[in-house]
Amino acid sequence: MEAGAELNRLRWRCTRRAMLEMDILLGSFLDKHYAGLTPEQAAVFVALADMEDLELWPLITGKRECENSLQAEVVAMLRNVKVK
Image 1 (cartoon, rainbow, N blue to C red):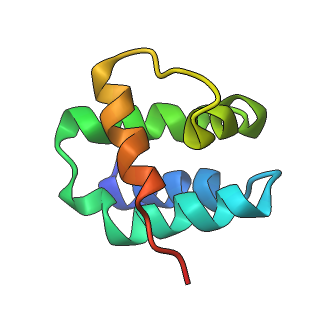
Image 2 (tube, rainbow, N blue to C red):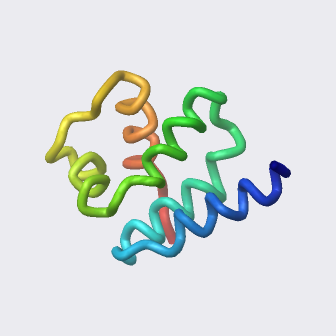
């Protein structure tokens, strides 16, 4: 599959969420930081973007523990995103 099409699909998943806060957070992260991720971090971000908001939001807010250290690393990056 073409990389551009894959990125467009990921952008769709990041910005068409049930929660406006998640649209803004994931969309901003994708625009500002995704290109600089390692392949492993990018895979974790894609997995996070595939989660339902009700599953992901507690990870972002710290109300639920991350599954592993790599997921915790990417979630920490998400928490530090500066949004407009």
